[in-house]
Length: 306
Image (tube, rainbow, N blue to C red; front, side):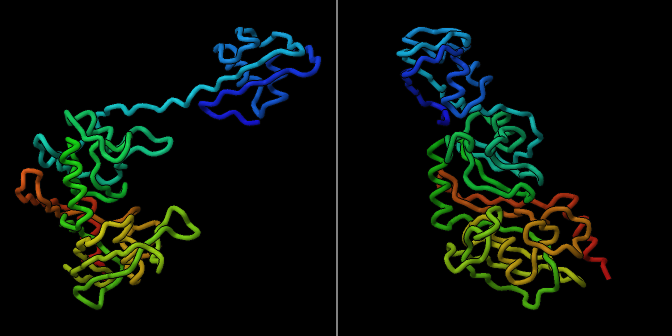
């Protein structure tokens, strides 16, 4: 039997054992003696209603109870991570997320995220969609930089999320993609779902959710194209999957891209450059953000590549 957090187990000793309690438990449970001894030392194991030591000799007829404590959910800590706040009022914050920053904590990773930074620099955050996602209305991939809106109150969170669901938020991205695109503008309309074999990836699948990306080529280079994209939908990795599908993957994309002509980029050259939405007060707000120095240098390399 395997012990699980939050469970309580009861046993009755039916034979004459005359062995130590920790040894008896190890023979009946799929746990190490050291782990069982820790439970005994914490008074989480009782015999006949009494706490005993690990060396107690088990007797026939003993009633043994083992209580496994509930798993402790780690709490998020504020961290003073540099963060560019573009706008802030009592309802929301607009930030310019740097490349390389994970948006919210995940399994085994509760530090060094945008949420940790927000906790240190913003006085109030909405509950959001989970304990580890306070204020987070929408996401950007770790290595995608640019504009994000963050809710400070539960009311503003609900208001902004509703706009996203109704496709009323306007989001533009700049992407440097492989190859010279043959059309100057268009719409990629391909459904996206979880890759059937590689679970960290998404893929164009007939069974996927509808996904549309509008695009316009800003500049053609000899082996690359600088593209402005507008999300109609907001699927995971949408721009990266869509441009890989049409054989123009984002430069530097280690999941979906090519290994050649990456111009020294080690991750996707993708920046959320424009954001427009209706504020909870009713007025429209729009923000623009220029790509960082690294993005600009890689574009310059593409511009001067023969």
